[in-house]
Image (cartoon, rainbow, N blue to C red; front, side):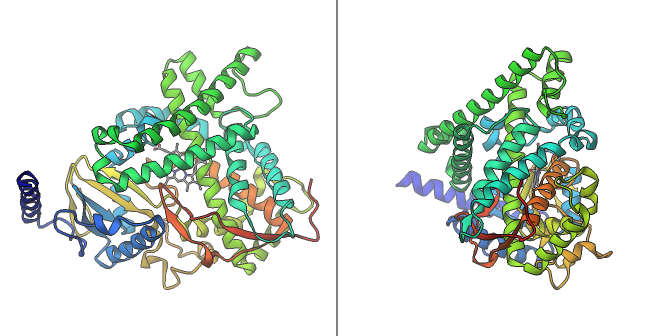
Length: 487
Ligand code: HEM
């Protein structure tokens, strides 16, 4: 009892000392935090309420000038929603925060979780794999996969509401395996196992984040959560090892390293294997880390963004009709979307950007500050963590009075703010953003030209995890368009 009292007194004294010693140039504290534990009690809630709470917090930050300090348990962080200050932080700091270490046992030195010193080198070697010339060769795969999704959807047409997120997620996983990893992942058993393990692993990571006493590797190691976490990782690593072995065997069989027989593209993994065989840039473990990173970052994101976009199209029939008319004008009688068509689908691009503004699926990024960062009205101190609320930037008043409305037309106006942040900001932004836009546009073109969608996004319960998602799938209904022939 005495020991507990002493620890409590020491915590209060430390908290009081820290608050007394705040520099005058620091941003203001977010009001409403408790002594010692700060905001932690307000964050200990279910994932849907947490998402609503974070949106309120984001609005408060914006009202306070766009940058605040917040204490969450033992840590004090900066939170930023101001678009200009967010860009300054993202441009100046490329070291990820320690929170990303929660993904290290799974993703190792993959780009998402790598330390800056490793990231800088690896990103330079991997950028060419995402060049426009290589991405253009994926168009055939994007079309094949989109038509496969249309066939799945056809089974649901005219039958009332169904959960479209399931079909989209499996389809997106197959697409990334085909294009980036060069293997057919239609084996539905492996595919389902992967999707289930991934969902569980995300849940364990979020639970660990909220239970601050599990942040230390020691306490986490003693917990039951670690057992669940390791079991999921072992399934995911088993899948990536299988994918790698398959591709290595294919390459050895063909005795060359020039793409997959029967296809016109060279998958990303071939570049990784080349760099490791010929230039010894990557170790076997690092290749596996990149494969794991691309597998998750390359499918769960596009699947979630497509789920939200299709739901929004179903909720705004006039937007959907405009998209349909544009697709008909651009594609005419053609069965497939060609790379030149993608640039002509201007309204569809506006819809996708507006959907990712409205539902910013990667809600935040967190950076460790190596040095003091001077912002417009304050200075952030070195060795602290700064969390940029990407969704907060997208709901900032710079978007105008209609900021809370879904309005794709805003992207076609000359004065549209240039702070689209769904793919992150600065040099450490999303390496797959062009891939994502190309694959999502192709999928939507096929889906909208075949079906009329109905949905109501206001009935959707959104929850926050590593990304924001619909709490229990979301239900749309579709009707086949009279003119549509499914091939
Ligand atoms: C709608 C789709 C997507 C969204 C919204 C999205 C969003 C993001 C964001 C916000 C980041 C920055 C994360 C951070 O700083 O912590 C990021 C990084 C990354 N994304 Fe994406 N992404 C998408 C699709 C993709 C695709 C299709 C791929 C791969 C084919 C991909 C691969 C990556 C990788 C490897 C990184 C780490 C980049 C680095 O640190 O160098 N993403 N993404």
